[in-house]
Image (cartoon, rainbow, N blue to C red; front, side, top):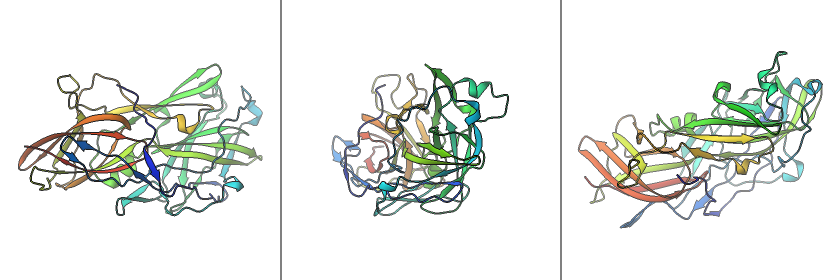
Length: 362
């Protein structure tokens, strides 16, 4: 398979990040505005609906992640601290539309969302050598969970025992993962890690997508510490996926109820025809900018299509897909009237919302 991440083909409408004001003991998460898509799914006989898209790009402040803390760290610098994340003063601005992540609703082709109280973000300190993770006899876990303190568009995230020191880089991952799901390694005394994103098990609802499949990555950089607290700046937090809203019609334009939906690559005549990766890998590392982090779907051969099983038989479903350069897709919809199939081609960019109506035949 080709690499799946692409540069967005977009017209920016309102994307200036807003200042993140931080309360003691928490991270303030601020999200960008929305973007307008110039593409979408196309078929040989129809230009599909849904040209207006919303970015799922998550922005905090514009601070650099290119600091170069000395390696290895001195143990004396490592202390459990209450982490406080603030924005660089020069980045004050206003934004017309914001897009947080944990609860998502659609508002006229724009995805609006809120953090929920208690939402959990996993963090992993990337600034220490491999042995700090596996020879940790003194109880210095360099990972953990941060919790949202309220249901707001901009929420604080609290972590009371975050082991960190000046210049440390904390990878932030939402939805949370288990520490055992991260494969840790080291290259030239620099920490690297990988974790897996799954797209299997989607039910087509925005609620489930927001909770389990709206994968986001970012970095917070520690700029100062006391004995008990740490101040950090949140650089960038972005969506790694594309969210599509699919509806289907027959040749007469009648909407098709969706009992099950199968999505796969259209590779007519090959063993991968109609099949789709069930998971992908995210590779992260110390001093790697957020914009350089993408998800790579699992390699061929593929074993099955991505199957969406909604509750009831709705006429539209929301699906998180891997970003992908121009790619033909195969769709199969089953309902009480039978099975319908069709193909369409699209380039799916990171962080976009793509509504599409696709014509299927029985």
